Length: 469
Image (cartoon, rainbow, N blue to C red; front, side, top):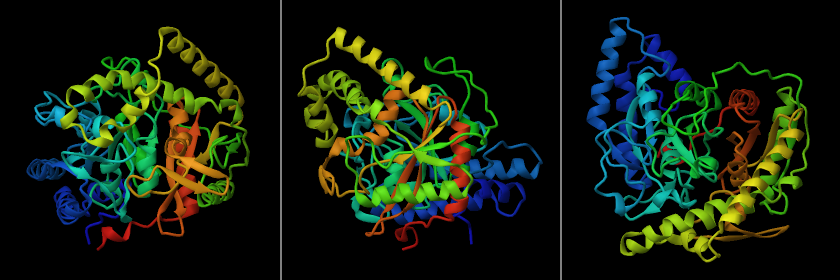
């Protein structure tokens, strides 16, 4: 059987050893897409002919003994916020139906240079501005674990495609949890790197100032070891990205530090099963050899509110005129958070400067406390995958509002720290539950290594039943 369930690391090994051909890999994934996409609505565009042609070319190169790269013939997908030469980057919006990209985004070009084969582009929330993935172009992406639930957003199409074994992995983007929340909802792994570690050139909206303070490009896959592989192919300096940092790949030192655990973000309730998943993850990490102790996040309790100041109040002032001008073309979810942000007074210049200063002080204070506690463990989201349109949940600690549920992820966009989401278990409804590992700036290699060792103890995580239906 062609191993669509296999990790990218295993696929790469099988291709190099001649045990499977890139053509077989691509055909298996295209068949999976053809079978499941009508139900899940993950794909915006499928490059079937191009992928088959690239697979044949890769096979010929392998036969000639040529070096292929880190990702030899591996079938990947790309969130439809990254440019692919000759294709539109719709970003979920009818307002961009006439767009055509003249060149690949840097991340896409690097995947190709490493030997990957791009199967297609995946669905997003309109303008990437929501935690549910639905728009007037592709419709609603549903969760492969339960089609009555959301796949999350804004990288919901990418998360669903990877979970449903239609893609071995790919790239998403994250300005407030848009990689990690869908990864949590769909039971896969997702990395939000430090701003500048992976170039975001060729992404829409542009991830420059001020958006690059929050938004990043990052890999998504089913395993931490696959993220490590993708990260190695993607990272590196790009002089066209104003946030890009010339930080080389490093071997992490995994001894002599503690992991700090917080079962919830301060002041924000979580569902009890989320709390339980964090405790179970702490046990796995201790088994893997990492001391775990409680960590007090109250000094950064203000972080989610400051994140909303930028993501909601400030950026809504930019998106608002676009939404107004194209009101009939914008999906209701495309304007929900825009309207919420514009319901508050527009930020003044003084408020923006004060918010930036407050953010820097919160970050500096947290990093002082993380000198010995170099990795934090906490939830990725306050609830499991929810039904579309749900905006409030009851917990034993009180009601949980929609944006508050996303606070554990959004806070680290504000603070600019790398964060990794991994599935830790399932709830009583059989839905995935993700945890989050947060590191110090530019220490992605460390949290990925911790994630790999966590997965060794946790064991294999199942694919959703729908992937085999």
